[in-house]
Amino acid sequence: MVETKTAKTMHAKRALSLDLARGLMLFLIILSHIPLFLYTIEPGVITKVAGSTALDHILNVLMEIMVDNRARPLFAILFGYGLSMIYRKQTERNGTNEAKRIIKRRCWYLILFGAVLAGVAGGQDILMTYGIAGLLLTPSLKKTHTKIKKYTLISTMICLVYIPFLWGGIIAENQSYGLPIALTGQETYFDTILERVVSIPIIPLFTHITFPIIPSVLMGIWLGNINILTEQQQHIKRLKLLTISGLTISLAGAIPLVLINDVWFPSLFTAGFAYGLHIITGFAGGIGYAALFGLLGIFIKKQGVMIQAIAAMGKRSLTFFVIHEVLTVMLLSPIGFDLGSSLTVTTSVMVGILMWLFTLSIAYLMEQRHIAGPLESYIRYLIYKK
Image 1 (cartoon, rainbow, N blue to C red):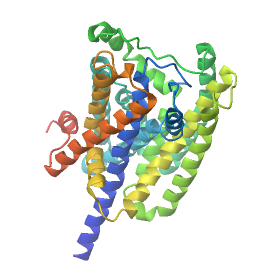
Image 2 (image 1 turned 180 degrees about the vertical axis):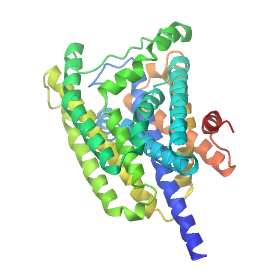
Image 3 (image 1 turned 90 degrees about the vertical axis):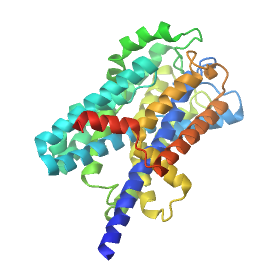
Image 4 (image 1 turned 45 degrees about the vertical axis):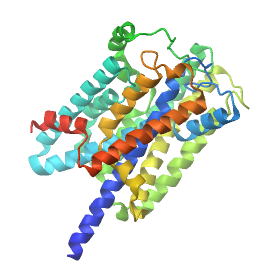
């Protein structure tokens, strides 16, 4: 009886860590995507729009420190962790070849879902990018822990060498600290659909070149191989180390970008270089966040309504990621309600919070009624044909 209760408790904590990470990750993604639709405000630094009030500036700083280029690697790490779990589970049941086949099918369907989301709904792509990463890295799933760490280190060093210089060139070519927002307010759905469809193969290619996607997914595979978020009690020391070191590096890497255009006015190339460092150190931030959620899964003893709701959303992360992207386009885009033309930095953050809380309540109700995420159910059906 004692062993059974212990096993159930460990299973609950395992699920809680991953689901909390996924649910909170979706909140960070909302906050990172909404500023892309504030097209009537002057560009600020890189993807940020210029703030007009003290609160706007504070929120921009917090976003640059905690959200920008931190949500994306967290997604990638959790994606890699999931690949590791699926591979191990399917290998035990059906063998290595079948496990790889299932993962590849899953990745192809993610690419398809992402293409529909970007081309038809106009949302920001993540699914195509990570689906491609999964296809490329499927062979690495059978490698040893040592080789995975080696691959992660090598790919990280490659990104560290070229990404800051690449972004330095991009910003210098841009002739401004801030990247222009492509929206004009005159767009209609049918006017832009052809452009979106044509850009579908370009989006994941650009993302893979300009951001450390491969090392982030590899890091997730390694963390999944050692079960750091599913057997946290055995990795408390490592989780603490990853949390402190990852978030410290992330903070240090964000400081130069935060200073630009307020107290520091570097050359355009230097500003782009600083943004490249912001991206690379954001990889460390993603690791720190993942480890932090692993620790939370250990120390949360009582799951209140809020924790249950976040975990419920995390269990249905694919469904709610797509819902959030569609809602963002509908509410902020000129092809929808066009709130992006009137929101400020502060009010856009408020809209993001309200959107997340609204969908969080839906996730909670689905959990209470034992309703699975429809996209999770559909992709399982497509993969397994059951």
